[in-house]
Length: 229
Image (cartoon, rainbow, N blue to C red; front, side):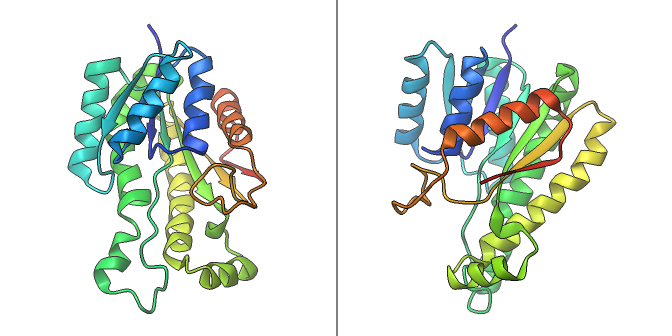
């Protein structure tokens, strides 16, 4: 039976490259995002290379939609072997100016959404024997005064806080999931990726390089985090 990877937070950069990379290894690919047009284009591009793919429109900040989506993936492509969490939110860029709702929303997609997806996919990941959760993270989440200064200057304080919390979540889950035979690891992207929403024309990182790092983590299952710059 073919393996299935679920790409959550599908877009034109890292997640598209991850979908292509795993598709080349004969994975079926489930693409999840809010933008229906982007999803349709992604499925068409994968199918043109012989990869079986399907689109699932969802708001990953909503727990019920995360659960519904994973159930739809199972019904369409079969059990989940790999969960790739690429979804993030950019609310509360200025923490002092953000109201309470915006501050709470920082964690809805990258933390609560990820945790919900892991819990709901866990039975499949356990049965897969090589089940894995692969998480995209960014350098703003590193605990470094220079990076903190940049996050404030770029109006990315909420993103930085979410990334730092997500990094801690990955570490905690690594210990807990190990007893279930499930691997979790993150790639810390230390720079802008060409073709992504963060590419202002000066990006230096290739999305394929990040995707290769994810596939290597999936195979080796030995690193909690890998920096790509």
